[in-house]
Structure formats: structure tokens, C-alpha cells
Amino acid sequence: MCSPSAGGLPPHEVNIQGELYTLLAFIDAHHEFQQCPGEPGCDLPQVVVALMFWSDALHLAMFGNAKLWPVYMYFGNESKYCHCKPSCNLANHVAYFQKVRWPFVDDPPQHWTSHFHELFQVQWKVLCDDKLLEAYEHGIVVLCCDGVKCRFYPQFFTYSMDYPEKVLVATIHQLGMTHDRQQHSMLAWSNASRSQPVSTARCLIYENNYGIDSAAVEALLKSDSWVLNLNTFLDSLEAFGFNVFIALVIDLLYEFELGVWHTLLIHLL
Image (tube, rainbow, N blue to C red; front, side, top):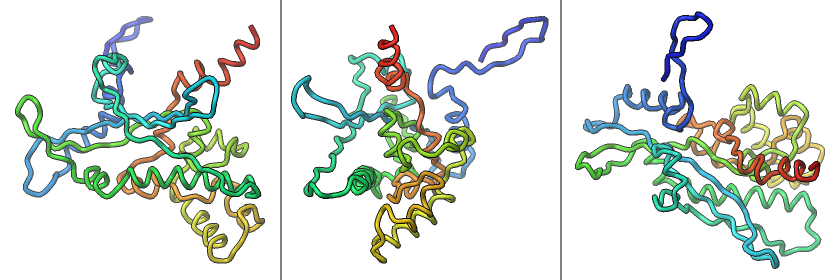
């Protein structure tokens, strides 16, 4: 907090945004856990553990097809100035995702996309298992290095990646519809508007043998840019108040320094 005074106005408090643990979302989560009754028979201090995820598919060499798709995590409770120091060892490799290998050359492209979405969400389903969900709701008791026991509640806060991977996480069509920008700005996307049409579309495909690109399926999903795949983040974590669309934050590394804008700027220069 700071109390600036300019233009003859009286001093007033202004939030300085610099770390995740200074954000209003983190502060609200902290206050919420302090006010909740906690686990029965437990009077330990309750601590929010802010989880920040990144993922990025990459080539391992300039020549060849060797690829890797790591998912790594930082704790938002640590300072970003410590995150950027390799000597602090704060980056945690969570998993290495697999990609779909095409067994059939005649498989239509729209099927490839669906398989790609499905495999990505299934791998996150493995990560968001029952143990994680139990810890998400009930916390984990940990003896800290200062000798104090606390109950830590891991909470997903941010997930950063490039645009193609954001499409996978949000389970939407790439590029989407013309009104998607307004929907994003209003944070209007939620599982409430998604679950019914997706469930109906999957029923048409898997039980009634409709095609993925059939008119009946497109009529259900296309208007809101949904795809027919299940979304692990919405299905598993929405009950705890997590909104994956808010968690998809902009990363300057992906959006500018290594993204399309960087390539365009070099071209213009």
C-alpha cells in the first residue's frame, strides 16, 4: 500500500501490484480461509498455497522431430525475484504431457483436434486426482521449518501458456467466434453455460453415432465456441470456486517476446 498525494487531493491508499500474494484474489482467499470454521477438531493456522502453472510444448533441437511438453509449477507465496533465480530451485516439474500419435492416415482433421483436446484433458484428470481434490478441500498438515504446524490449502491461481494451449485448457475452438472477446472481458464463460450442450453433443456422438462435424452437434456448440470434450478444470475444481477462464493469465514471454507480435515486429523492422 502507498498513500500518494497529487493535484491537491488528500492522501489515499493505492494497491501496488507486484507479487501474486499482494493481489486482491489472494488476499480474499486468505480472509476466506481465516473466517471459515476449518476442519473439525483442528485449530492449526490455515494457509493458502497459491499454485502457478506454466506449460509449453517445445522442440529439443534445431533439426529433427524430438519434442517435449513439460508442465511446471511455482508457489505464488514466494517472491517473483526468487522465482527467477535458478539457485533457489523453486521451479517444480509436475508432468510431461504426451501428444496424440496418429494411427490412421485417413482420420479426418476434425477428429485429430478432438483427440488432441481429449488426451490433454485426460492427462490433467490424472493430475487432479482424488488426493489433490481432498487436499484442495481439506488441506494438508505440514510441520514447517520453524517448528510450527499449519494446515496448507493448495489453490490453483494462474495457468500461463501460449494461445494454442489456452484453447486446449479452455476447450474452445481456435480463433473462436466474433463475440468471444466480449465474453472474455465480461468473464461470462462458466460451466453452467457449457455443461448441458457439451453433454448433449457427446450423447449424440457416442450413443447415436452422429459425426463430430454434423449439423446437430454444430448447432449445440458452435454459437459459444465450445468443443465436445470434457474440461477437467471445470468438472473437478469449479465446485471449489475455481474459474479456469480467469486463471488463464497473459504472459509477456508467450504473448510478445516469443509470440506472433515479436515475429511481426521483426518483419516490420
